[in-house]
Image 1 (cartoon, rainbow, N blue to C red):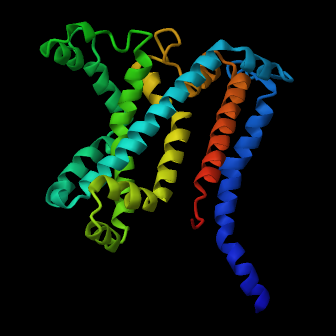
Image 2 (tube, rainbow, N blue to C red):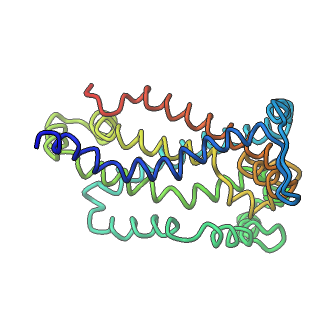
Image 3 (tube, rainbow, N blue to C red):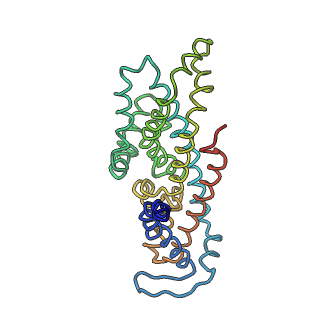
Length: 294
């Protein structure tokens, strides 16, 4: 009887462990072995390449360019999605907005449920250099000099692509923060008001510390997502153009695997993505000390 009770918890988690092993860890290990091979999907041939793919990875200038773009993605996403999303959530939870906050929450969350493909097609019209809404607006307010081919310029393409991601994802982070803020005991806010604390003081002294766990979750999702971003540059700038100005590491992996038929090198790039996201997640976990009391 005692043995059955001891085994029972392991039987409950066994399906999950098996699923993870089959669909996550086995492909990961297989990908590691692929990174040491030259693989052609078209011919079906493969050969041992040793460390050639890794030498190519560290000498490829496009990899550096892609990583810089991913870092830009991560930094801007942290500021906009996590930072601005938290401020937005705090404002919408203020008492004077309670009656209309549901309307604003819906408005901000709608982009999240729209397909990213549809959003990218929509913004390709917004960024159109001749009759796009953005340039037309700038011209209408007298800022003609600011109007430019946003997606056609190597200087602005990556920022135009990043802006689309922020527009879509801020609502998601905001909703997570709203859930976290609603769980904060109201007594804390009442006590702070009695002590004469202002709204800014209350935000930094009560709201911010109380939603630390959610800041960690949102930061983790945002940063790892920034290093795996693919759809936006692939659709908006046709795979990272002009040139390689808006390319990301995931787009580079796709191009090598499915356009240049170099699946071994693509496996090496994907391994780089895994290492970067795993290290960043570990750093964030240690930094935030989640699950531990202060």
